[in-house]
Length: 272
Image (cartoon, rainbow, N blue to C red; front, side):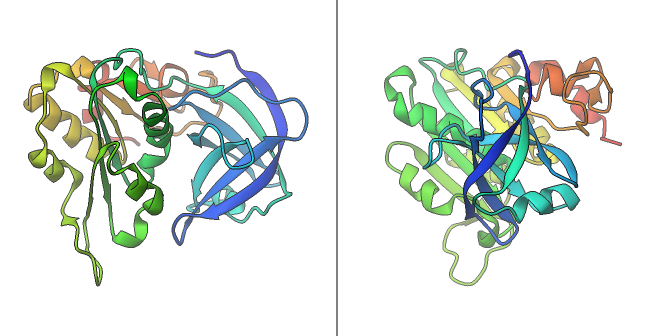
């Protein structure tokens, strides 16, 4: 795990609406900055006077050179972050946790599977692979969302087509939707999967990750070739409070990204 610096003040350089309840926030240091984040790691973002929440990095470099986080307004703190405007200040702590192991995927086909806002922690991986195509085999991105209106980074996803194989599905189609309908695992049937040379990175709701990882293993991927990003109730982000414990793991310290071979049996335990 990367050494952790104290929380520092960061200024909002810009925001971008992704969906009706999700906004990307680009943050630049208001003074000295934190160490660089790796794809898959998270920060603790503090909204002054409200509280703090863990948020995974969704882009390592935004339009103004800052780090980007995508926030869905679901509680008091995330709603306060959602309302931030350019020029506002927050406190940022991190980097915390483990990132996606792209070293293990070097030279391999890479399969990125995201459900809903789970695309945010995987987005920097897609950026990194597209910028360094010679280091990987085929890149495939599968995205699922509840409805077309819930798709994040929709314009950007369209731009990935060509350099990557991209497929998108929704649970409930709206008027004018001409894409696939169904859970994201149904997209696996369309793939020419080469399990012996494929690494898969999966992030989304826990039930989605559980079924997706099982399906991938059933199709021939070794469990240690499947990485998942898990989430429990992270509070301290340093492995001291125990709120994010999952069996022997403290996910803020030992995760959030872990190999499916380590957690397959643990994913059978529902979060309290």
